[in-house]
Amino acid sequence: MKNEFNSEELLRRVTETKVSTGNERVRSITKRVVTDLFKTIEDFQVKPEEFWAAVQWLSRLGASGQAGLITAGLGFDRLLDILEDEADKRAGMASGTPRAIEGPLYIAGAPKSFYEARLDNGKMPGQLVVMEGVIRDTDGNPLSGALIDVWHANENGHYSHFDPSQEEYNLRRQITADQQGRYRFRSILPPGYAIPPNSPTAELFELLGRHGNRPAHIHFLISAAGRRALTTQVNIPGDTYIDDDFAFATRDGLVVTLETGASPAGYESLGIDGPFTRIRFDFKLQEAVNGEDAKHLGRYERAAG
Ligand code: DHB
Ligand code: FE
Image 1: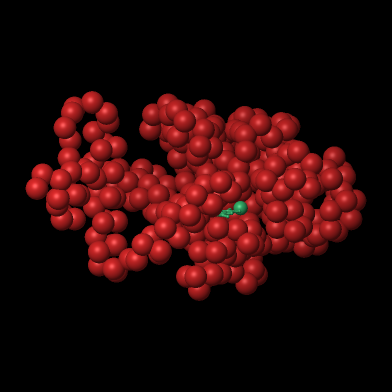
Image 2 (image 1 turned 30 degrees about the horizontal axis):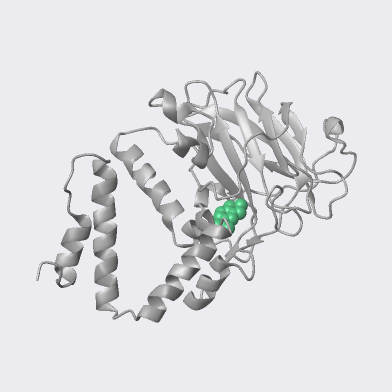
């Protein structure tokens, strides 16, 4: 009866270690995940049809490149931020601007400029905005030469690169702050974002009875010598979903104020000669703990090592 066994024995055989090669951490985590899934299947009496429908869904998810999208909606991205915040607190680190999730839509290599940039091409519908401020350390000192990647959705809530109808790097720039740590850019206020309809992600959210909307936001990846790189977003106030983000990424300290009535004087180099909306926002970067955390890298670049 060597090859006849119950589910407990099967689990033991699946997760047992016969050799010492491979990676111990991967082995332990896999064991835990498989154990929990075995238990879920047994507890819910998951039927074969249900199991294989889920496997097909996973294949569709992978094929659509949306694996890194569903993580935000299921709370994993925010979880990682919460855990990092807690670790900082335990270590007694001075906190900087709150971190917020990167999301799946960052791409490296955006066009570079010094101090200021224009993200829009002047033809986009939407509210003209200038966002400006200073990159500082946690004591408030400006960080000369800080590097700022900024990206956001277009008037339809879509991101260039992932949306083939947009020009390459539309609404994506990398700005180097000036000697006083200052940056500024001109763009349009983005609308909110919704997960792609008819996608594997949307399928699951429908079954969960959840919406897939994010409030209007602008993404940042900011770094400076000796400081820990900061991945964050700012939120545009007044959005219906500001406290009901499907990705749980809104943070109270990151909702900006929209100023109207500012004089266009001094903004000529951004092509502004009339009314516009201004956002003033300074970012504070924590001290770097090791060389790694200071690197200007997106999540997948960081994971690739
Ligand atoms: C997702 C999209 C975003 O624009 C974002 O900032 C975070 C998550 C998503 O589709 O999962
Ligand atoms: Fe986004």
